[in-house]
Length: 311
Image (cartoon, rainbow, N blue to C red; front, top):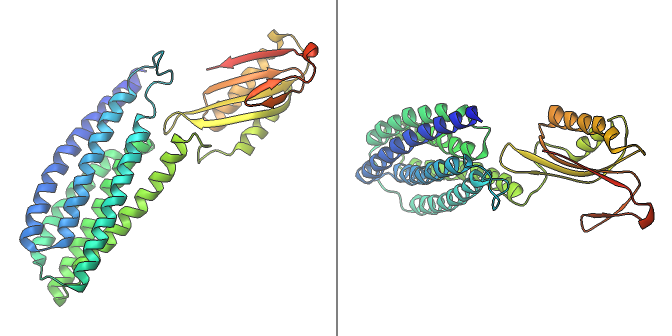
């Protein structure tokens, strides 16, 4: 718990530094974008403005994720980061559409730009965004932080493209390169955001985690000595890297105390192979019919269920 709290505080510091630096860069790209008449720089300003929202939401999410579970929030606030990532990704998709429409309009009505200013401001952006992305890289397994990391990585690549575009305009005078770069930036934003929307929606809708196979989990539990059958198996994500499992497991006739070793073996297999540590396993001595998530034996007088829970 102490290590988790320390990691959360470190991430909050990194996010605060990132927020301050990004706000400064937003002001710079907006001012120099207007001065250079560069849609690419203005697009970068809008892109980085969305980054400030992303970083701010992620900062709040990290704070809430540290809060303990309560009687009202029995799983705590583990999904705060997932919700923040979902909102961030949606805002990025809207921004990408705006940039694309503006770029298409400018392709039909080219505007003279000042490539030297474009290149100078973009070079500063590459250094800043690259440094922030490197700081976030170690924690990018968390979907909340990975959203911010993708924001900053995308900014690093797009600002590098602005430098190349500025050089191209300087060499050829082809002002259409500016809106073309904006279209490239918009496509990159949309591509990275769509993957985050899919992943976070899957978590919010309690779908099977993308890195887990229900068939593999069922086979692993069936392979435990003493297990006769596995059914009513559910696996979902509590947060971006925390998974939970609930299942009915049929075993042979034995005292409840004798089933403890089977339960331990199941939990060890789930923990070691699939990194699932929050489980609810219900043992059943006879076959039962599952209706609306509840198990009912075919013969009421023969029912003998043993419930075992592991958290």
